[in-house]
Image 1 (cartoon, rainbow, N blue to C red):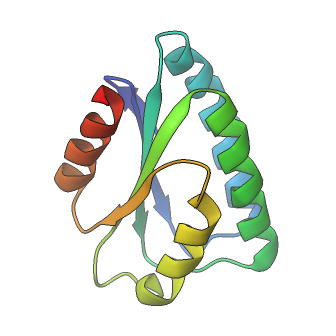
Image 2 (cartoon, helix red, strand yellow; image 1 turned 120 degrees about the vertical axis):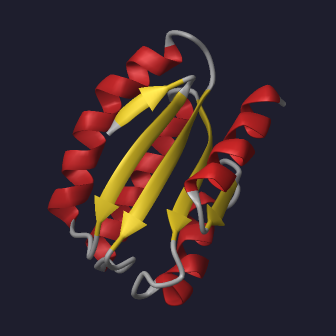
Length: 123
């Protein structure tokens, strides 16, 4: 996990579980404070391995989305290559988690995600 130009970059190897989500939130919270001090910020989460997680982890992600939106995150992009297991099944779940909270998109490449996040930050 690192940040550059108001974008927080994270790489996560799945499958996910609640412990991983809690670890992510702990690390992301301190970085979010740094980013928020300079204005709106975006997140790019690159998922590798599997895009699958249990219901308790999904609920923790949902709660985190609201927390980070309140801390200045204006959009989130996931980078999920087509060969990631569970990507097609998980996409509607991810979209429902972010719906009505902040713009959200899924991309095949990091470059496409970065370009989209920069447009969102400039808006």
